[in-house]
Image 1 (cartoon, rainbow, N blue to C red):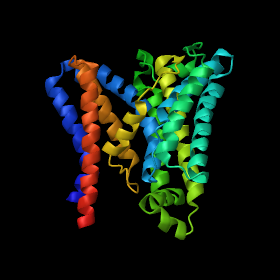
Image 2 (cartoon, one colour):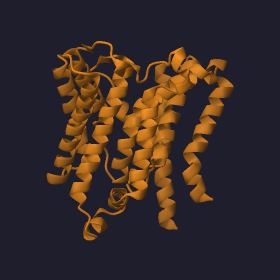
Image 3 (cartoon, helix red, strand yellow):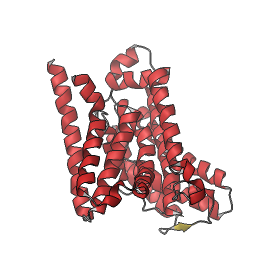
Image 4 (spheres, rainbow, N blue to C red):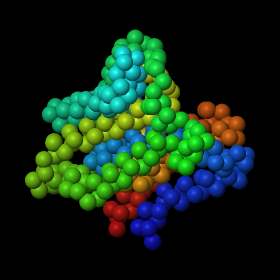
Length: 317
C-alpha cells in the first residue's frame, strides 16, 4: 500500500487540488478555455522539468535553468530579427542552453565544485549574459510560426485539442521516460544518484554521465525558452526569474528525491500541472500574487518534508 501511495501520491494531490478549486472557484475554472490555458502555462515548466528530473535523479541540482530560459528567448528573438529562419532560430536557442549545461557540467565534474554553488553562480552569470546580449532591453522579433507553438488554437485547428508546444512537451516526456527506464544511460543515472561511489566502482564513467545529464537539462531549458518565447513573442532577458524554483518543485512534488536515486517524468509533469492549477485557481478566485507565492512556497516545503520523512521511515525499516 505504501508503495502504491508513493506512486499515486502526485495524482491524488492533483485530484484534490483540482477538486478544491472546482468547488471554490467560479465556473470558468472548469471551462475548456481555462483548461487550454492551464496546458499552455504548464508547457514551459513541464519541458524544463524533464531535464531537471534527470539531474535530481543523479543526485544533483541545477539553479541556472531560469536564466537559461531567458537567454534562449533572447537568442531566438535576435536570430529572427537578423533574418534567420524559425528553425535555425529555435535550434540556436536550444544550443545556447546546451552550451550553458556543458559549462555547468565541466565545472562540476572537472573542478569538483558542488553543483549548488556552480549553478547558483551560473544563474547570475547567464542572466548577465542574456541582459548584455539584449542590451538590457526586450528584443523584438518578426512574427513567425514559432509564435504559434503556445498560442490559443484558432477555430480551424481545434481538432488539435491543445497547442503544438504542449504536444512537443508530451512527446519529449515519453522519450525521456523510455530512455530513463529502458536504456543503459537511464540505469546509470539512477545508479549514480543512489550511490556515486558504488557506481564508480562498478565501472560507470560518473564524470561523463554527469556532464551529459547537465547538458541535457540545459538543452531542455533551452527548449522551454522556445516555449516561453512563443508566449511572450519577444526575447526578454528578465523572463523566467525565479522559475527554477517552480521547476525543481515540480520534480520534488512528483516524487523526485533531492537525495538522488528517485524520480519520474510522469511525476514531474503532474507536479508542474499541480503548480499551474493552483495559480490558475487562485487567479480565478481573484487572489493576489503574494497569496499565490505563499501557497506555492508552502507546497514546496511540505513536499520536501514528506520526502525526508519517507526516507527516514525507509531507513528505519
